[in-house]
Length: 210
Image 1 (cartoon, rainbow, N blue to C red):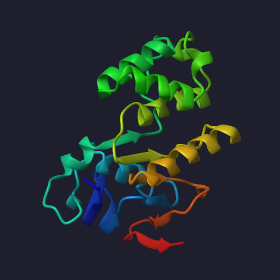
Image 2 (cartoon, rainbow, N blue to C red; image 1 turned 60 degrees about the vertical axis):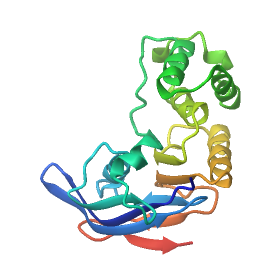
Image 3 (cartoon, rainbow, N blue to C red; image 1 turned 120 degrees about the horizontal axis):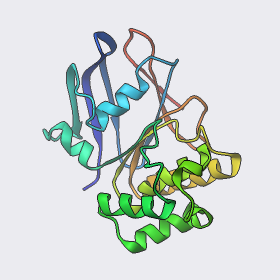
Image 4 (spheres, rainbow, N blue to C red; image 1 turned 90 degrees about the horizontal axis):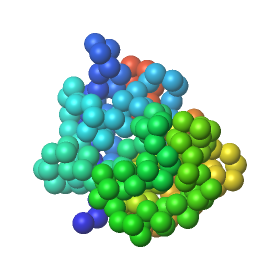
């Protein structure tokens, strides 16, 4: 089914601190919402709430007008945070196989991800030996190994060089063209059309179109 996320009256805490209060926004198929704002305003906390890792203090996260609960969003999402969540002692090929099996992918989708992300030359290396940019590419393979309509990305471009930023931008645009949706925390503008959701301290998020 086409996915459209509706966030209504959402308030989120980090510990005892209220980061986000009464936030309302929607994301439809083919849309990318870029989360912006200073460090500490709640961008990562919002992404984690959408992914089902952080329960809302108040409000709801829904699929369009449906009354389905938050777990429906989480089970149809890929979340990539600052931490790569990789096992340092595995070889790259072993890590890819583990992630693919865990997520429910196939040998064909794994091979496609390896090719698109140019991971062939890294397959026999231990994950601990990879650079930050190489680890990010390894993590990005999850997005391609198993199709999920919602991508929740926390500053995905930050460790990548210019060439691989362009590669990721192409992946994101292809996902949107296929009817997927993206919510992405960024500091720098993405190289394609997005809708900005600017979070500010102790204020309701301001939606800016452009």
